[in-house]
Length: 164
Image (cartoon, rainbow, N blue to C red):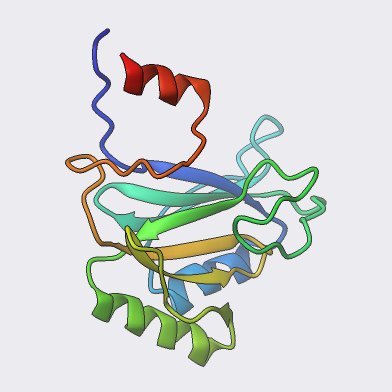
């Protein structure tokens, strides 16, 4: 089987009912550059689609659908029905970046956690104005070079790979 060379997140498409408050949060509070906008062209593309850079060629993209019913606030890793998205994790370069981001979020009045040490990464969690759970992380290890498998009861596909 030919290997696929993944190169990180290109973009993650999410939904907002208010692009302005979304841009103000991601650009102004978090400091992510707005790198692309499209939409409002004709009846085939009547909505906005904006891209905010998270670095290294990756972005978070939002479609603005004014009449969309956004989900209720949800913490990361907590099951919920009807939601097909849990959270996005965005890497930052250092613990200093993580602390500075946490302070920026706190100062803006955003819902943000303390730093959580997961062993393989350290993270803070926040909720954006659309109720989307965002994790910002500093990796403690390179999982591509040093994978981490810690499931006490892995699914069959993982057990088969380990046995083979």
